[in-house]
Amino acid sequence: MGQTRFATGRQLDLICLGRLGVDLYAQQVGARLEDVSSFAKYLGGSSANIAFGTARLGLRSAMLSRVGDDHMGRFLVESLAREGCDVSAIKRDPERLTAMVLLGLKDRETFPLVFYRENCADMALRAEDIDEQQIASSKALLITGTHFSTDQVFKASSQALDYAEKHDVKRVLDIDYRPVL
Image 1 (cartoon, rainbow, N blue to C red):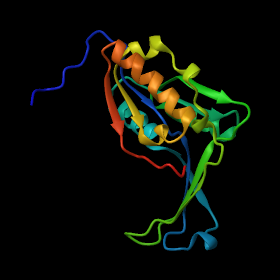
Image 2: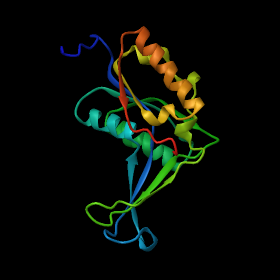
Image 3: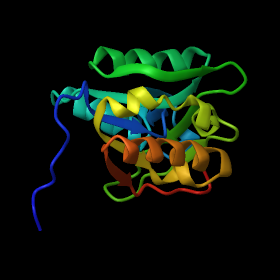
């Protein structure tokens, strides 16, 4: 098996398409979520974490998703931008809220979590949100498995994959498939 070869002369190394939400981590380690009195706020969603991490490591990454036109959405966009991630393809959705997750740390192996993602903004990504020129400007496109779980995000993801194939952009599947989200 040979080494993967990426197109040269591209503006971006990686575009991440998929989940983008706020993770609220309990600050009382060992407590039940019912007993937690404070949470710390972080960027969340597997695609967003990859975009953030690759930007931190010096890659030219971009995030392609939706957030609510709300305080949490602005927090996410600003967090990614501060890390050097291109946020120009993140749409602000005036009709939906930004996704959130409450997480606890009960012990080394138990992490209770509650998803608040019903009708959330990142799952409202549409095929029309996908910019062919942005996809063509990247060496690779990563898509989370969750963005194949409903008709609407499936169409958006498929559109991005079609553009990627057309422009010789490598495709990566993040197998974080959660159809209940």
